[in-house]
Image (cartoon, rainbow, N blue to C red):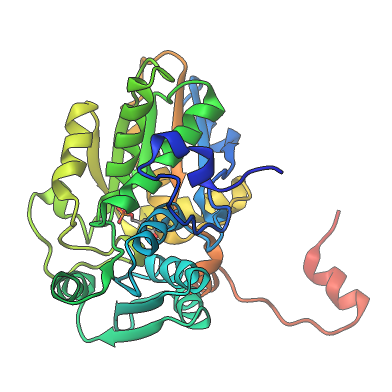
Amino acid sequence: MGWKGLIEEYRELLPVDANTPVVSLNEGNTPLIFAPKISALINENANVFLKYEGLNPTGSFKDRGMTMAISKAKQAGAKAVMCASTGNTSASAAAYSARAGLKCIVLIPHGAIALGKLAQALIHGAEVLAIDGNFDLALELVREITDNYPVTLVNSLNPFRIEGQKTAAFEVCDSLGKAPDYLAIPVGNAGNITAYWKGFNQYKQSNKIVDLPVMLGFQAAGSAPIVNGAIVSDPKTIATAIKIGNPASWKSAEAARDESKGLINAVTDEEILQAYKLLAQAEGVFVEPASAASVAGIIKLAKAGYFKNKKKVNIVCVLTGHGLKDPDQAISSIKEPEYVSPVVEAILEKIKLD
Ligand SMILES: *Cc1c(COP(=O)(O)O)cnc(C)c1O
């Protein structure tokens, strides 16, 4: 039968019961890909692996949380769900709601959503409303509405989202046969770093692993409230999925950082875009810009000597979303195609084969 989706695969570690109507698109089971070129950039002792979450059904890790949130909403008798989104949460909520037969309402910051994500939410039939304001304001409004009206919140403040997302940590350990030494991850609303830390701890308590990883979180420099220790009222970054100035899971992200003796640092948009191109051109892995923050972060740490004098280390970089989510960014990051006359000689002239 193969992989049945993460609720069935990790049922005994999740808050579901025999009556939970499982709403699944067979999410999870994403590949952990060895990255030889990036490993060599870190140092001769490093093995870097990429957890390619862009290969989930709607193209981001959000599906892990959404299969749980939508299944539990259905079990509780909900008729409608609602979220604020920088894009991927809405794409995922829309798809799982369509499958579950639930109404899905999405609040987005006007003009700040990558095109692919908006297309997904719309084609899956969500009611998409754009506000004049950023993600943080959209989330505030959604919290007020879901607190007071019969509609279920499916942002990562919904604890079932975190429960589903923690399964990515289980998969990483299952693939390596142990926890990695370091887990590098982009940080936006900080639900995912919270979820990974919870997953690693639960695997340790279940005696499936012995050691815990050091957690390395990365925010975009123009949108780095946790790094700065202060809310950013007007966050700026090309990495729209982590363009968040007041993370909902701020405290638990700091707990993951401190308990693991890790760090949460900032990377600039330029560093993010360099890592974005490196992933595509040296490793063949296409991600959206926010995802590349994890790779940009470990490259920056390596340059500062962070991984020096270490014995052989395994570093896992979480790649949160697929590159096709944000085609505009890809096209503006490289040269547009050149025109050529439709004759063999003209083409040969351009491509300069040996
Ligand atoms: C949601 C998202 C993030 C940020 O995850 P948080 O849980 O909000 O920290 C990063 N990258 C992508 C592609 C996302 O969709």
